[in-house]
Image (cartoon, rainbow, N blue to C red; front, top):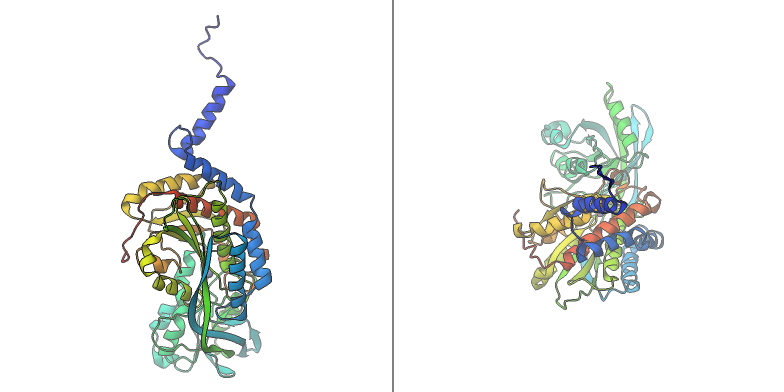
Length: 474
Ligand SMILES: [Zn+2]
């Protein structure tokens, strides 16, 4: 008889302990995974080896390419989206007309005239009027928009204003929100001060010398001055010259502007759930892009992720309870036109939207999520946190989810939302530039994001919780 008090633990017990520890980490208790958890683990595994999103993104960027709202590329994108949904066997597909002012970019150049003569790399801001031929003027420098807002109009009058605030790179992309005002509001403030034109340092972090376009505000009162974004090297050069004692003169020649009305379409597809009700979970992205690249990350990645994740869930042996709706919004970039039209047309269908999530922050891996649900549904969101934990995605409770640009319009009416936050560090190198192309998307990151969105979709479509309506004023 062995009376040694320290007995070796049999191998099977060690394995059981390891399994138990793993489950404690994900489930909070040592218990068998539920049916929901097993299904989600299977979905996450399947997503990581599924190339549907990559094939969709390859198709959209190579067969359609740039698709600015109202352009020929935009119309091709709508046809592509419809036929792609047909190929993925969506149960219903329809289009919703969206009208908006058509803005066109024809040509854009800028150069320093003094104290040296050399070209400057610029791109017109969306919604900017043209200069009506070459426009030259002395440059007046401001470090930020508030500085321009505080300036004496007598000093600004007739000058070309330059705002040079630099966007900081961060995982949560918060630097964008802090600097985008110089692009969106700057053209109107410059006009009110009597400026002839506006140059801004690009709002983004592109390291390759390409400028970032982007729209000016569609809600600001008054008319904007002709406005363009300088690449970072061009902005650095201008700042360097402006720090000297000589005055700096620039010539700007923008041929761009509005040209009547255009119509595009929101493309909507649904997969049926198993319970026979018409209630659904909604995921979306925007189909349009800017014209400088092929819109691979903005927002081809979101379009491909939403479609592929919905398809993965729909292809389970048993459909989840509720329907899954995918909305590919028209012309988000130039004023959220598709999102506003969609929110305006839902009417009695509003309450069929159980909860939504929008993919419009590129192809970096999702690392965090936020929620906006009724307080009584927070326990259900804890379950989502448990399901996303194996992907190292954590629930951030610092503030409620916003719903994104397009689905945020529904959130403002009370639709509950989840934000799956993508790592935005690389996104803002590419955003609205000529570098927004497929080569700058990592297929493994894209597949990872499909796993995250499929988890959200399945969790929400299987849930019986009442997530909303949430307080629209919140
Ligand atoms: Zn976007």
